[in-house]
Length: 203
Image (tube, rainbow, N blue to C red):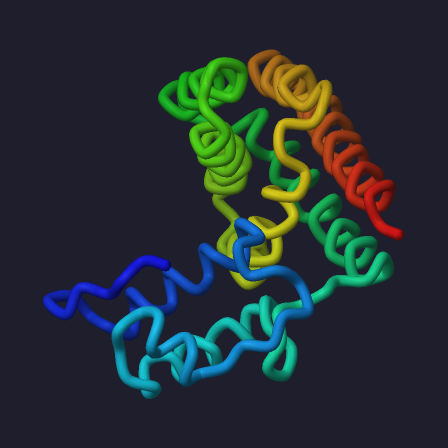
């Protein structure tokens, strides 16, 4: 486990380390989180650990003292919101996206095809974030921001599933053609495929 550098803000570091471990599955779903054990492993006091766990609970990664175990219904509900919000964002992005953002999308697709697993994850996140930013709708951005940790948790579970890059390409092509209806359709379909993949892995 990564140790905390005392020269930086201890709370922020503790939060980032624990959050990353949960998202990557290094701390598995359902595992009980013991403040004393985490504090000892990270080389800090219990106070920043307690504050970190409180924040992670607000973000939905922790329920009680355990790492969240999303049910099938949880997944369906979260992806329903994403389809509505990100689909609408893609529709607006097709018209409003800047040239630099369009170039960024194709870079993300290229990285997803050729990068290492962590590089692919970052590229996929940036792809979706860029489309959200291009919507210029702060209310939609706030909704996705509140769901960010759970989105990343599911994104790591989806990984580089088959046809993911091809689906991103269809979204990108629709945006390049400034076809908002097609961009929304392909974004919603892409997210539905991600949900189906996650549900297929559930017992």
